[in-house]
Length: 297
Image 1 (tube, one colour):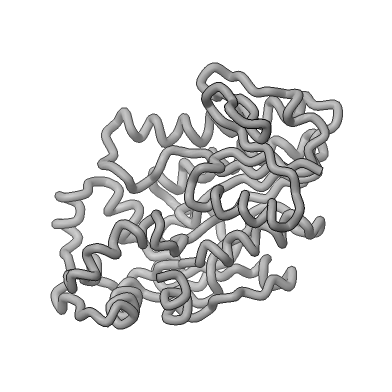
Image 2 (cartoon, helix red, strand yellow):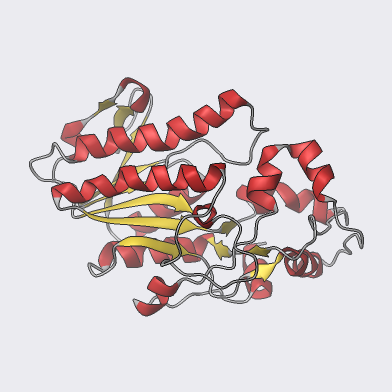
């Protein structure tokens, strides 16, 4: 049986494709250029084009495509790209899926813990409603488009992912050089919770969700033990055997240097519990941040 993956060249997509193939699954990657290999099929959301033949009869679709959230300053044009690359692209994909005579059994579509907005030190699970802010609104619209797949009888899972830990990219990959120079420091108050997950556990959770037909709806893809930003800073410095700066980076300096992403992506607190994964029997490989950082660095 075939599994379709969008965003297959990204940090999570690359790891997932490797794991699926190791598990004996046939994978077809949707790409936005002329396919160059047998395992590629064409789609172009901007033109509302999807290769329906490639989707027909697939066992599952994993939808990870989307412009990077934190790679650049948010100009009005880039914020529109963030929305289009998620909301519109998901709409185009789901419109294609509901046309199929043999739709997939399951759609696993990406989302983020930013859905919840800033929740302080409150422990929250998937029952928590949407928060406020640009990213919360974006996640809700993104998830709503994915949920429409249910009209075709497709089991739909929205993976609300936290900080994915890998030295090869993502937030950790970007800050490692700073910490290796001994210049790491808490951000803002440092009291905000960061919910994190290793890429290996993200892949493990994705495989668990694809195989478990009882799991649907929003699912938190986060470790059971979120930590404050200050604790994350101390633990990363200790793991690298480097000191960290005693003075936090002020929130106003972050906002001046990075812009709106600092207020939306770095300073809000998300103390998220993976209640559905735990209830469904998923066993995390890494629950301690220290163990996780030692494993991935």
